[in-house]
Length: 215
Image 1 (cartoon, rainbow, N blue to C red):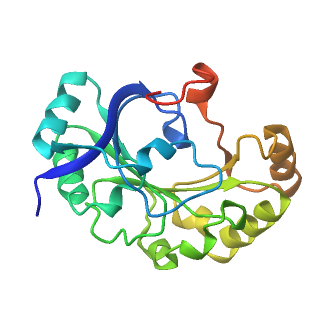
Image 2 (image 1 turned 180 degrees about the horizontal axis):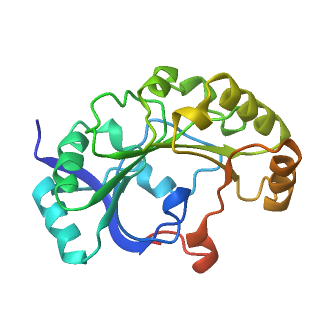
């Protein structure tokens, strides 16, 4: 297994999403992605990155002084060295993997907490969902839907119910797509249906509005 990996950027910030929102976190954003979601906010990660050794990334995490690390992208699982990186990070702190849900998660180390997207029709990438991944999720893991409109919301509501996601996962997060759905609208829908989910607002964009990367 290769000891190097293509990296877009590394930075320390406040975790903006899921149940970890608000926590200081060391981010490793890997380069490359197999999807092209219409609302993607990190298109710069689609391009090839800088090759780094897994060991150097682990050292940088340790130097950060933080106890939480997240490997994100792009799509981290496009690179086989990601599994080595995740295993190494787990030895030094809690480790999160943010993945778009289109690639097999069966090789992700058990100690890693998976934050998995489920792509809605509005993303333009719903056909890419790897539905077998749902069977591999546990109570430490979370799923996330980015909602572009009412059709996406109703679709997500059905997926949540039919797959018993609120029982299978530690949290189900629904977030409004920036510029496509107003947060109060999504909040009203969730409240009306008494849906047992979390509304997922990107806290980092509230703290640093207009930041395009590294936040």
